[in-house]
Length: 173
Image (cartoon, rainbow, N blue to C red; front, side, top):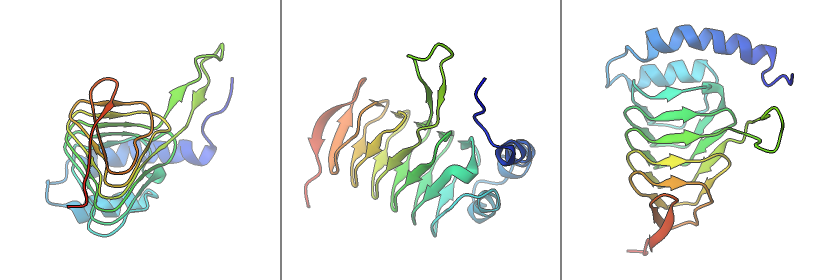
């Protein structure tokens, strides 16, 4: 059976399993600096003025990187088996799911793939949206509510639906 996690990651997972429910999730909503400190202690690379809400579920903080002025709202699922990068000025709305891992369906044992994903700067990932493994969302793109994104999204593009399709573009205005 393949080994997916290093010894260091196994230890970090055990620590996070204690820290997350007690010190992260139970913190008051406006304690963004407190949660950022915890995430940074766990290895996250966060920019300035990042606001992560207490009900956000982050699988592996050490595989999260953000720019400045990022918002990760209520009940967002950051399933970051691989590195998830979120650019500056991006908003990830409530109940969105950022899925940075999958399984190889061609493999007899469904080998785990730790793909990660990338969201550019000044993007909006709307409520209940799903961004799939390995996807790259270009700068200033918008992913509509409940969209399912399984392919890359070009910069300044608006996508919506399941599967997500281009429904508009962002002008310079």
